[in-house]
Image (cartoon, rainbow, N blue to C red; front, side, top):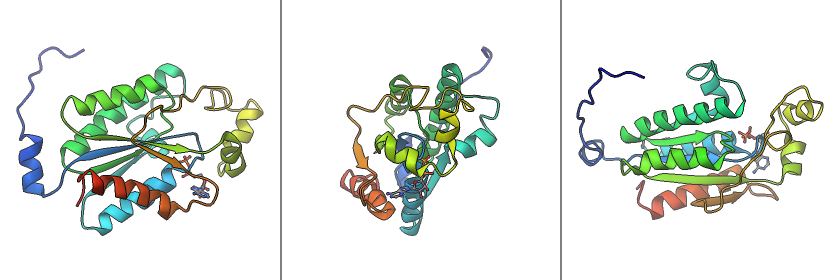
Length: 200
Ligand code: ADP
C-alpha cells in the first residue's frame, strides 16, 4: 500500500459537465455469459455516439487482454477484476462519458462496491440486468464455453460450476429473449437515460 501520496484536487464533476456539455454516468450490465451483454453494450455505445455524445465500452474479454491480464476466474480474482473495472469506470464517468460496462459480475457484493464507489462521488450508476434463462444462454453459447464447462474443461464457470447472484432491484431489467431485438434492448436503456436526464 502506497503511503507518501497526496490527492490533488481536480475540477468538480459539475464544473467539468458544464464545460463538456455532458454528464457522466456508468451503465453497468450484468448477466450470464451469452446473455447478450456485449451485443447490447455495442449497440448502446453506437447509439449514444450517433447522438454526438461521448461513450466508451469496457468489455469483459477485452479488459482481460490488458489491464487485468494477470487475473483468473477464482472468486478472489473475480473480485479484483470487478474492483479495478469499477475504478476505471468511475474515472471515465468522471470525465463526462457514458461508460458502458459488460461483465458477468456475478457477485452482489462486487456490484454493490461498484455502485458505492460511484455514488460516494455523486456519479450516477445504472445497473442493468440482462436476463435470460440459463437454457437460452446454453443454446446460444457462441464461444462453446457452456459445453466446455459441462465437460469440466473450464472450471468455475458462472451458472454451471460457479454462482450467479441475480440483482434484486436493478434500475433496468431486460428480458433478452423471446423475440426482443438488440435494438429494442438498447432502446430500453436509452429511454431510461433520457428520462433521468443523464443524456439529452
Ligand atoms: P455476453 O456478452 O453476455 O456473453 P453476447 O453479447 O456475446 O453475450 O451474446 C451472446 C450471443 O447471443 C451472441 O451470438 C448474440 O448475437 C446473441 N444475442 C444477443 N442478444 C440477443 C437477442 N436479443 N436475441 C437473440 N440473440 C441474441
